[in-house]
Image (cartoon, rainbow, N blue to C red; front, side, top):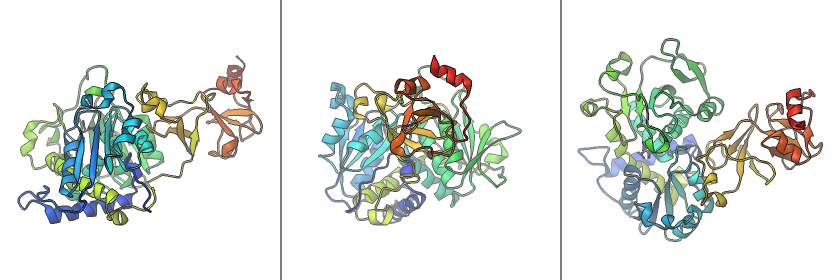
Length: 455
Ligand code: NCD
């Protein structure tokens, strides 16, 4: 039996699977494309008769919802769902987990968009059918990334060694987070052009460097941060500029200065053959005058939403799954990091205030789960929103001693899983009867911390 696959992060798919989805999308374009506008799907087929897609949109959507619905109709299936959460039971206080368990009885595949980071993974943990993340808070938007990568590939042939500039709200744009992971994994170099105060989250940068093989370098002239492949000097031309709007719904205060991409910005030599990309909607950050510029790629990018989402649905539901997706949930790093479940006394909780686990309605449906990331020092990554806890304390049940994750070198080798306890602070560890211990090098922890434990 095919095991259940969900797409909650771009990293749920390995690179081979992404390439195969692109082959399927290309085959739809070839077979069903408009003769005049080759990136537009103009005809339908009968691949999934009777299949039903349900959309659970707790946030506004135009492209994601309509292109998923169009994709399902083009495949010969049907789409249900409401565009406005105020007309669903969410407005009566129903939890996402309950809604998912009900609606999955009415459909074969779910697409979820939600203001909370980690909502898609929570939904997936309750669904007996595939769940696709249509954007969860500022966490990720993996299917947008598939459209973005596919667009880049159509324009530039290969993704390897491309230079891609990312401009705007790098902190809150979920499309950027999924996109930079994928760019790094496919071998592109990334240059960051954040609006002031809207820099790429430290976690995302850490993953680019430590999990996806990029090296962070600072451009001596501009001061801009680049994430480049380790041994390759970078070229100066920028192959694509990816622009996003200020994510006003995720910021309590209005934006200050915000970079605008216009003819003036693109006048520099490095942008001569650049592809100007934007997930849309645009507000003011992308000048209308660019619409007639041959570098403008954003409407084509939006059009690819249909063939790409046809490929995704088909891979998850039809016999095409055998061709495009592997039998077992694989993903890029899946399985490599074991799961830790918090205990009532640990004090360990997700540090991201917008994570679904902190929601008053949905939080009680989430288990306190973290992936144990074996870096040096180790990290605990929220299973839902993937924010890392960088500092915590590790207790060894055999010796009843505790050391900070910083001091507990050699990854997770200090104790076997069931003998290991995690604490948010030395005080929490002390409450459970642990005392500060030696680290693996046999050195006593710093006195300051000993005092902290005593007090
Ligand atoms: C994006 C989103 O919802 O994150 N929209 C989309 O799906 N194309 C981008 C945005 O809203 O800025």
